[in-house]
Length: 85
Figure 1 (tube, rainbow, N blue to C red):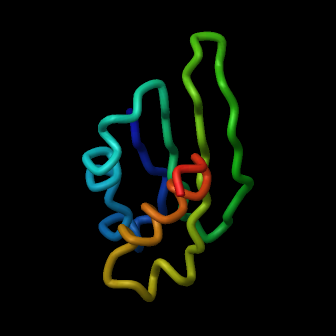
Figure 2: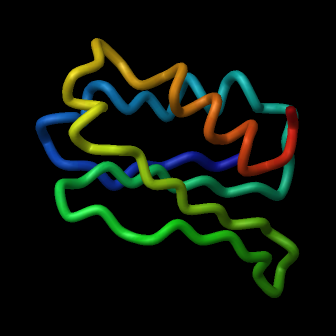
């Protein structure tokens, strides 16, 4: 599992990719990109030619700014998007 983030500086410390990578280390062939910027963007989900599932998850910037950290929100979104619930 690969987990990365594209975030504005104001929320960078709140979006903990290491937490997600450790919680879901058993998942193979999955790459997750968390995006949390003022501009926002679209979510996406595709499987590339090598069989790697790539998932882009948008986090709500205004809400993340208010939270002490976004780990629980991030985990819930991953579970939902990957259909692990």
